[in-house]
Amino acid sequence: MPKTVCSLFAFFFCLTAFAQHKTENVIVVMSDGLRWQEIFAGADATLLQSAITSPSKDSSLGNGKARAEAAKAAYWRDTSAARREALTPFLWSEVAKHGQLYGNRELGSDAQVTNGLDFSYPGYSETLTGIADPRIDSNDKVPNPNATVFEWLNKKPAFTGRVAAFGAWDVFSSIFNAQRAGFLVNDGYTPLVIDPSTPQLDLLNHLKAETPRVWSDEPFDALPFYSAIEYVKQKKPRALFIGLGETDDWAHGNDYPEYLNAAHRVDSYLKTLWDLLQSMPEYQGKTTLIVTADHGRGNGAKWTDHGQKAPESSQIWMAFLGPDIAPLGERAHTSPVTQNQIAATLAALLGEDYRAEVPRAGAIADVLPK
Image (cartoon, rainbow, N blue to C red):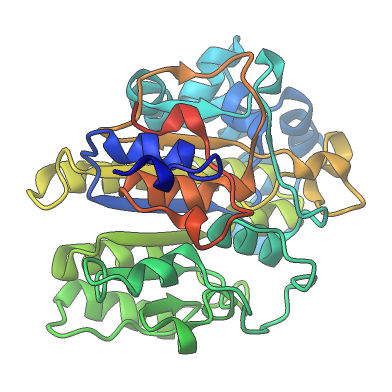
């Protein structure tokens, strides 16, 4: 490569271009509003006790006190290390050993949102485009004026037709601007129609249509997740997004036991996904997994909230696992990482220079191949 190509601006990516990339596929999983506090310290004692003494009165889920006590039995342990392993065992048995985790502020590892709004659409857009655009200032179903890194990849011959996004929340079609993007975006209660279909997919579509709807804008996470699993088996995408929503929904409902259960399911979905990938020759040893949240939440009694009224909700976490990720585990005393660095990092792991297109996008140096 001529030296003139390696300008100061592009120097970092010129170096990574020479690195041997093993990653051929990237999958991003985001769990809406899942706090870093539970990821790194497990169940919160005060919030659990409050759920027991002042249980949710939602009778449709059964006895609130009994559910809270069951959550305590499932997730409470005497140490934070044991609690987090009980809540998210895949993250702490697999990612912590073979990948990297950012965001434990007790260890001097900060992961931050930069858009200043700290709610969902701005957070997803920042993550997926690499920029915090002030025009994205609501959760309304407004088509994103910015192209996501997934749309950018889909325009490249090596990725065209090999990109897809699945989400519980029915705003993802707008976040990805599905009409313009040119790849599959399946969200909300929309059935997934692919050829060939499978009995499993047919059942998932029936469940989307026929099960009671607790939330009008999104189903339970199992439906988009297992739809994505069927798509992976059938179509084998190279760039895939999965957005899960129950952690945010139960939190807004002040239901800490169900929030914990949802977080635990997210972790189990990650294991299911990773195990599937390792069983398929198209993915085994060639796939990087990125896991994060669109925003954090407040502390104490404000744990249900996020946005500008809860300043702590700018605090997020990130996890990376794959063949090019150095096994540095739980990071400590690192330079801050930010949400707007994920898109370019994702592209660079695939050997692509997203920053040439979007100069404002950052990248996380320690995650990239050396």
